[in-house]
Length: 220
Image (cartoon, rainbow, N blue to C red):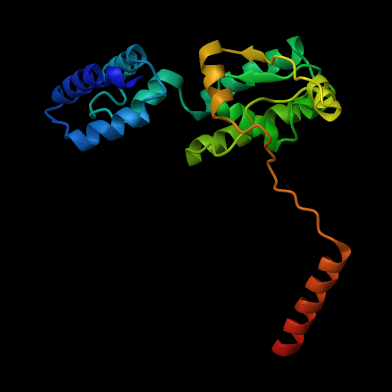
């Protein structure tokens, strides 16, 4: 949703809460809007309707998490939807070309698993284990409700070689909704490293060891 959708969102959200005899304060309305900003106003309408119709949860007034669940599904189904996109890209795009997905969490998880090229290089015997690892990592991040920093694209072999030689990068392949993939790219980091790296000289290592030894002797 965009800023222009705030008025319509307030009407829709307020009407849904009114069905349960509840009123919404401006503060709660603002929090709900920000929590659901990634979705269109139509998707929010659909999520609210499904919540109200649900025999399991429909007796309770809706919260943003309820709407998200009815739009995207639970963490397990969302993780599987994400994996299906990854699997399709592995098979149809491959390791040579850089990709950008319409889900920032996919970028983060694949980066944490070693990167796009490493995933594409996995053989058929190991592939199911990589799928399980992806699903586990993805769900864990969903439950923590965090993405954190992530690479704006998942670099393929060609771009890696071009970067080393100072050549221009190729256009990445967008997987999923193009407009959402473009947003993921815009908000991502160009030179991303999942694990911060720093070169340490032998002298610095020796000094560190000597300091640790001195501390140990003082404590003994």
